[in-house]
Image (cartoon, rainbow, N blue to C red; front, top):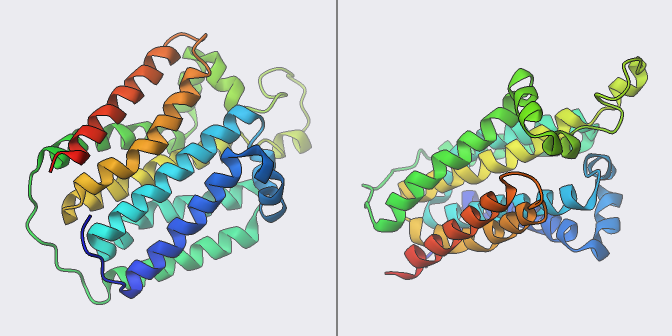
Length: 266
């Protein structure tokens, strides 16, 4: 692993990554979830069942490990590329009703922008190692997965029509069932917050992987991403009775095996 200099940008990224890693561990392990929901009560409404809770925790862990991989390789570049996902994370907390958390994340976003560009980073020439080439193929897949959830609307509706079990996971129980749902119930729908949450986590992980590729930390990033991607594959495996989910789980584990291989080969 590369030697790391504890610049202000690196310290800020370590703080953000630590917050996300702590949140993810409390969601992954049910014995700690009640403590987490005391801090983020709005997230308890977003995590409608244990499967979504586990998936949310796994993707948060993926994002936090990707931030750590980015800060080891190039903290300032990672701070800059983290900005879109931090803004989207602010929107998530706002849409879920967590206004104090939205303000906090926005403040961290402003700090990330400042430490990312002051002083303006110097990017070293890229080295196209096998790990960097593999991540360059994998990262666009992650970003393309995030895009529909961030855009929402008709794009997600089309996915829900193709995969009804995904609609069941993201939508509230009354959505699509009752035609005479009153406006107060519609206002309490957390579907959009769930979409933004998962989309933001994938966007953040993808952007940090881009930072690691640019800064020469692709091999370290491959090793760091292996554990959370193993867990996301397990989440798909839990839904293996649905069409395509078993194949998605196996594909995720194949990606993990490749990442471990490219990360170890020095």
